[in-house]
Image 1 (spheres, rainbow, N blue to C red):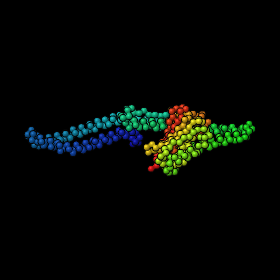
Image 2 (image 1 turned 90 degrees about the horizontal axis):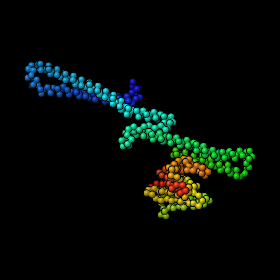
Image 3 (image 1 turned 60 degrees about the vertical axis):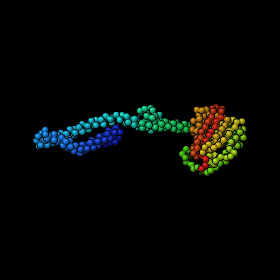
Image 4 (image 1 turned 135 degrees about the vertical axis):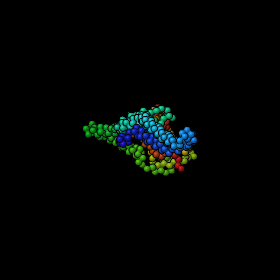
Length: 383
């Protein structure tokens, strides 16, 4: 019986009502036993002269007084007994009604959570009560939180499957090219010249970059790295990325413009290497998708207590429906073109984690296809 009570919320609710009733009955009975004699004697004393006149015999009056008190106490005890029985019945009815209202949704969520644990992430529970947020109780809030959790788990599982598929594809492509080239060399179909060796080297280098990017992504997602923070000027950071990528811009015929206030900007407290990686990812991405003859513009300005950096290109642009997902790992607006370009598809994901690790924010804007795009990020100024 004890085990059954412990394992069922409905029985616990009923038992709690019974405890409340029993305590109430004990308090009421004790109060009645203490107050009934005194109240009865005071009432009878006020009627003493009348009772004496009516009965004539004092001894008979005392006997009648005792009989009245006994009957009065019996009536009170009988009333308490009937009230206790009615209270128990009421507690049983209320516990059944409350159990249906409370226990049923909780039991449904328990079963749903077990199904989610078994991998059925599409499982959802019905939200009990009103659909008006202002009128929702704790059970409705719990159901909404459960559905939100299940939704996030479903999306995470989908991303995990997509990640595996994307990694397999990224590995398969260069490995297939290397294998085909080696088979051609072994069979004598291909001549061992410099072109073949360069192609094999490029594919092997692509594999190495993918593995390095995956290792870096794993570290930043887990926060398994140290930030070497120090105060540095934004002009120095921009100058470093321009010096590193200037030759690539010249080779492709793309103009690179830098706009920083002449009066200078407050320093930022950052890890120079990590934020340098952010600049390389964003500016390099702008260069990759800007055709020859285009331009890329780097702007930095003070925005309240933050330094706001905007990197704008006049390249391919990003459709509006892709903007919310642009920082998702392996996400590509144009899969075929991105694969030919050689990108691993996780540079922007790494960028997002690195900026947020510095207390900043990163986002993208675009007017649409062939209208260019702008990548923004903010960094708190040094204090």
